[in-house]
Length: 119
Image (cartoon, rainbow, N blue to C red; front, side, top):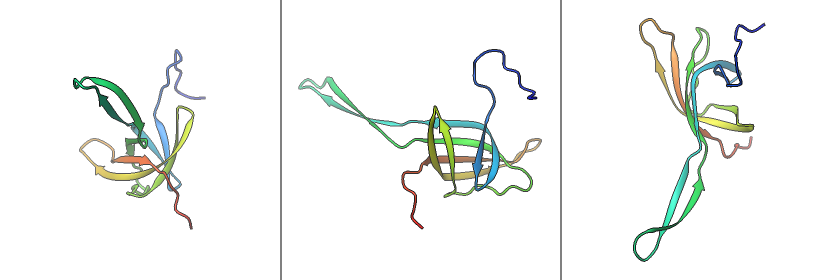
């Protein structure tokens, strides 16, 4: 039986990311869906039309590192489902953080993997 008993319908708790067959608890996880906006103006310089161009999904996370766990590296990939859509992300940056009276953590930035290299 779980120790968590939510009273309501709001989502609660963090994500577990599986990177290189290791499970990492993500203390924080931010996923964004960036868009470029191109604006067409009329003869007076007033905005007339917008075009919204979706870009690759990207994000960042702070993950806990266990004593015997490998530190995720740039180029590692992982899968994550966001709002019923499954994505494969590629880690683009990682940094290690250690401070007094806190656990070891790694901050990662990631971006949607568009192509999988062939073997």
